[in-house]
Image (cartoon, rainbow, N blue to C red; front, top):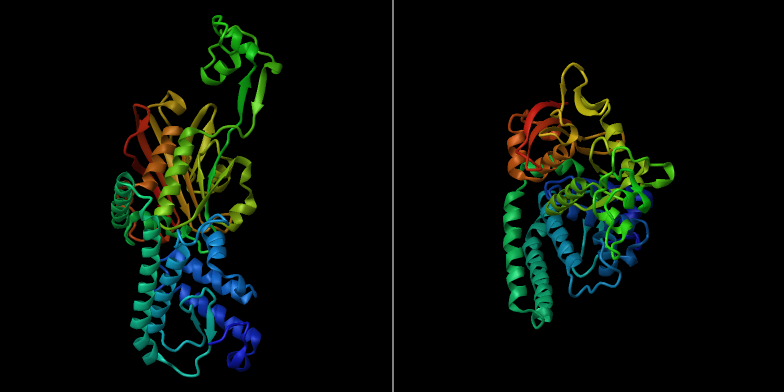
Length: 437
């Protein structure tokens, strides 16, 4: 076998550039195969080591460097205690064996030898299916044993530090992981909805707005309340207790300070936490972007989840051409049917804190950014909460999508949801309109 560092017969047969192109072509075929398409992390690992090798960085493909660049570990992390790279490399080797057992005559063969993270490339002169099939069980057995040995070393090293509460915690986490795995089987509604956002190279960006807030001066705070005891701090009270002003109190401009990117809505923050958790359970990396930290260049380079509606300018920009869109009439936020503007969905008369709210859930396979985007936003906070819970709960999402066309998972999708506010939280949402295209 050869690598780009050792041209050998393969380079002589193809020429250097042609051989590199054949490697990249074979890599894409492997990533799209049944052996790899269900594992974003395995796809990411193989793509990373192949591209790094072809770019002349093969010598740097060590366990620690891969852990830092792919799995966001600290540069000083202890590889002996965290075998994530070894385990993932073992999975990649097994998937490669499966792929070549089904495709025994490739133009170029890509292998990841045991004990190394530097891929080898070879151009077989003739099919070698018999050798592949006969050696596969032995290699798989050897790799499994290597991984089990690695795990045993880690467990033995940490055994003396464990106590019963920690053991119980670990066991509980393992049991929970089993239930998660069952709940997120490949055919699950959650996986079908989120799969278009999976990326082998870039994390999903979860984007929260940071609306402008305004702070009142301590002088206004003092005038808004009865005199406090000498130990009270007016500014501290103003930051923790709502200010109640007399209707006739005059506030001047010098008493108001704009606060830009100081705060995040709590419901949006809860949505960020839940969406991040679901993506992690689906084995997809994600990163948060808040306020002006998000740029159009970011959206052009990565899949994204936009949380919030009227407080998120990116949501309004990305949803303006959808079948259903957000709209404001005076102080009232609503959702409008673009093809029939007379058809609208409005919250109850109490406004954005009313007892009934509406939300839009949209998943665009190719948006204005040329990247997949998911939009989660309500006409009020309760609507946003209902939309987020819909997309983060298997049972709820399955019921919501039950009435959609059978091929909804392969299309652009937009839903209008209705929910009731019950004691400040959303009830189970109902689909009042949908569109797929």
